[in-house]
Length: 126
Figure 1: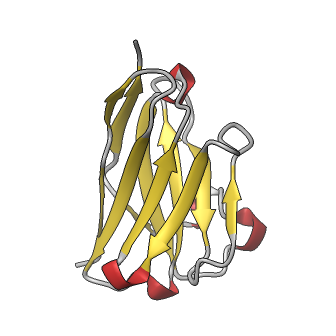
Figure 2: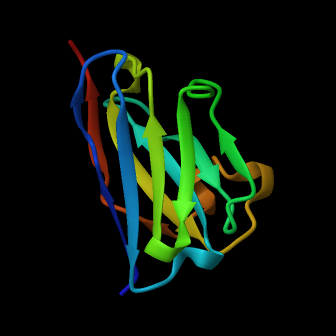
């Protein structure tokens, strides 16, 4: 059974950091593009970042550029989202998603993705 599991969320003060992990089971991530998305209460799900299957291409939402970094370790079948300089507006449930496709410049579009994790809560508050 194909499954994605996010971890690493939690409560952090503004300016702090968290690293989210997205681990795959039942399949290998090598040939999948991975996206990170988030959804805050009362808001639509938005694309945060994505990475190509070989890791050579990444994309970020303007709101997180320079603060978030996506990376992948195919040997560990895991993708990471390093989040620095967190702001209260980053508070949301964060989801990872996978698709066996070259997403090109459209990697922040949720409808492209076939497999989704259950999400992990990130709360930025003092």
